[in-house]
Structure formats: C-alpha cells, structure tokens
Image (tube, helix red, strand yellow):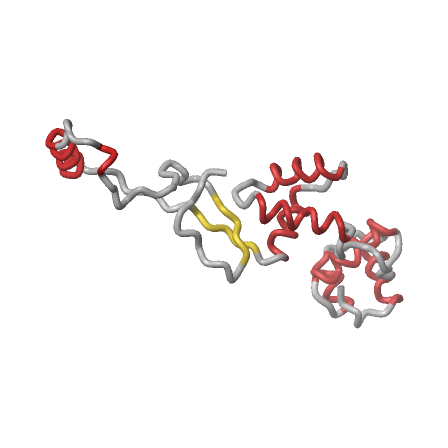
Length: 178
C-alpha cells in the first residue's frame, strides 16, 4: 500500500466509492494515485473496517518455529509429493491445518524449484531385433556371469512425476521410487 496518501485522502477514497459509486480509475484520477492503490485501500477497509494498516495483518510467518521445521523436514523427505499430500502429512504430524497455498509459498520461499523426470526414449525395431538376437545367442549361457553396464535404479514411466529440489543442489541423475 502506498504510504504517501494521508488518512484524510484514504477516507475520501472510501467516501467516493461508497457514497458516490465512482469507479476505481475515476477515484484514482481525483486523488492522483494509481487504481491499484484505490483497490488496496478499499480492500483494507472491507477487511479491517479501517484505513490504517495495522501490525499483524497479512504476510509474515504464520507457523511457529517447530512447525516451520516440520515443513522443512517434509519438503526434504518427500520431494515428489504435491502440496496437498504434504498438507495431509503436516496435519497428521502436527494436528494443525494449513492451506496448500501456504505449503507452496514455503516451498518457493525456501528456494525449491520443480524438476521433471526425464522421459526415456522407447526402443525402436532395430534395438528390439539386436536384443532378441543377443538373447537367442546366449540362451544356454550362465546369466549370473554377465555384467550389464546399463543396470541402474531408475523409473522409466515417471514422466509426469515432479521432484522439488532446493536451489544450488544438482539435478538428480536418476530418479528413485519413493
């Protein structure tokens, strides 16, 4: 909210809107401010029935320190969960309900950003034929003696899965199932 308007100007905004039903833009031209300032003053008036900004309204840290640390632990422990799933886990642990928007805001404020799982390319016909020929050639061999170089833990069908990782941490090379 702009602090350059006096209290009298703010009450004038309320009077022009309530008594004369003028538009935000028309009031802004009369008062010499932006229409967003007019909107903010009217919103403040409807929320608090006053035009003076008081302490404790809006913003700020809505969670205590221990509950805030609970959110941090949940974000690090469950990087692939949505904000509603994290909200449910938070409620189960603390017994306090917060909105999913609060979880999203804390996630962004703490520097987490979304990373999408990479889509594995599908095998084409040539790859399939090569693998089949290899299997047929080595059908009677002892498979415990083979070492496959592409054996790693990853999830091929997780193309829609989103992981939230903190800024500065490198992108995971493999995505493990939780």
